Image 1 (tube, rainbow, N blue to C red):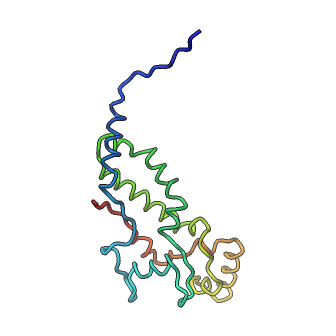
Image 2 (cartoon, rainbow, N blue to C red; image 1 turned 135 degrees about the vertical axis):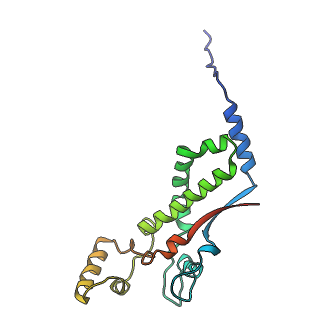
Image 3 (cartoon, one colour; image 1 turned 90 degrees about the horizontal axis):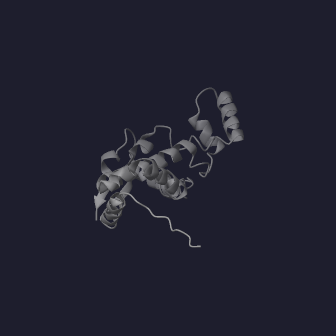
Length: 181
């Protein structure tokens, strides 16, 4: 008794188009995510967003600021999950229709969403929590009330969620762009 092999029928030209688009993408474009010149300045202070971002991305021993990577670590931790979901759900059509630049722009936006989620969650709890004294300085109200709120935040483990968001200037400075190689 012979076993019949299943046969596939249908139009597979879209797969050919997708493969051609992926080959066109390879090595021709790069997606950059970070703080670019047009979003570098701040409303107050001598430091730029890029300088403040570098201090937090890598930490500063002399300023006693621990590393709180908002670009590299979140993209390594969650980039594949977020960006993979974007590709599966929405943007494969761009590649099938050979809009490679449009596809790259959408991937850049997905990477921006990863960074934004890191700001919202304290990098999913990965960033070191704020110290008690730092929390006291950020909170408003009487000293007694600030002490109470700081103690509650530390007890709940929520003190990492308020990091790098006081003025939101750094967070809003994150952008992506597609550049040709």
